[in-house]
Image 1 (tube, rainbow, N blue to C red):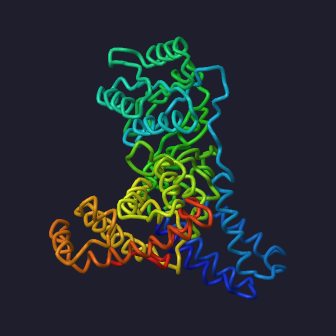
Image 2 (image 1 turned 45 degrees about the vertical axis):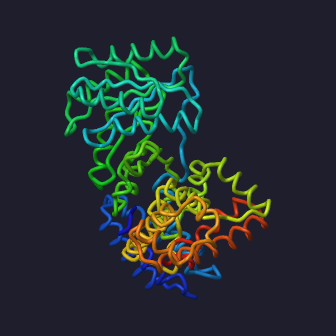
Image 3 (image 1 turned 30 degrees about the vertical axis):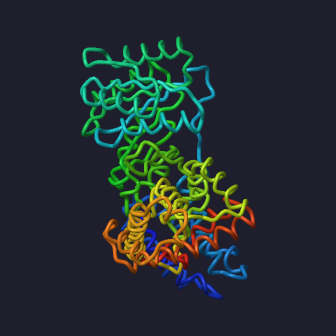
Length: 459
């Protein structure tokens, strides 16, 4: 996410971080680099101008010159201004209305609107503990109605059927009436998208908005369209009283132009970002955390939240109790840890939120991530090729057993030896973390297993 921008800005700001004194000249040079980085990232020109001017005003004032560490003070200003243009803080959905709270989803065709409805339904059900009904008012694409029905089934929310012979307003009103009867908390209304903005489309969605009076009107836009995303969002904001924006396909956006432009251009907050195809790949948008990611400082808070949501508490507690009783951390437990990491989005999902340790650039991170994913798959294959007895007690794995496991897992005999050695190191680490405070500390220590963390398992 935003790799190009992170790479350019990290390099530029690294040059000023250690400076004992900042002059107007080197501030000017740095700002030129920042401006170029933003323009290359496809950030809208008015946003770039405003951003650079605000940094200049603060940097040439007393804020930096009176600081004991002017270079670091300058980086803090850049971070604060990044947060400011993206909205300062996360804005939650305003659902404190008489149920059902209606959320109207708008956007162009292909932006990922229907998929986002499914993700948002899951988010509201699991994290906000709301009952949810979804309905499609897209009477132009029968496939969109079927897609929403499938998604509703997958995430376990109520689907209200509709068909192309009905009018969008009638569909939405019937769905809301049904939700009232069933005491459902939230109704998500998916609307028709077009390939481009046209008067007919805007008239239709304006009529729909007027009829259902939604608590939230969210504009869904593809982050990969860069400046176009901001321009399209502005056109919708002019036609509809939008309450927020959802940026989709952010995981594929190497530039970051949309994330930095949309709030400034529309005046509407980005409330969520879509980070992949899976139904749980929707995150609340936190400008401070995204600014930190853009500057290569990582996003440890989101990583902890992700761990809390995806880690199997039952398994974690069981393992803690087992270790406290003095029983060893066996290879089945080791495999469980690998699977837990996979559930957190694999190494790609983890590394995106970790600080760029050792100043790794995106290309290096990509290579390290690919190598690590391969190694972890190999480790899992080796453990799966063992008998239950061997997993519980690796000490019994003799030379002949190693040969059998290697053949079963498509690896070399020496790979089995290395895995057993790695497991012994992990055993020691587990014992230490359990003694010092249980699974929470163990999770923090997982950083040491990642590329750049100093302890990546070598196979």
